[in-house]
Length: 109
Image (cartoon, rainbow, N blue to C red; front, side):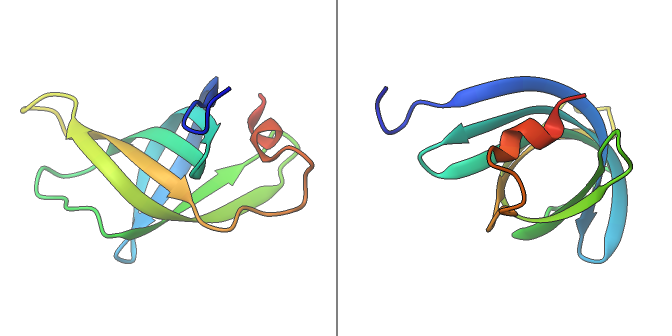
């Protein structure tokens, strides 16, 4: 496997995205690991004038009711439609927790 390939797990779970002190509800669509680290692709409900900040926090609760607050770096975004109040955003996790042998396995539902 080359350095830039990724291992992706399709996921769909609720998560809050915190940007510039504001909380936005969203869904994580997938989690992947590549040479750059762990990356989340999320759909977020926001207003049309929303501009993501470089540092974003993703808050997720496991099915065992354990809550994780992950510091992330904003990577990219696109609008689902010019008329929709949703964005698809890419987030890279900064310093993922060492709690699990396989960080991505935390996101199994």
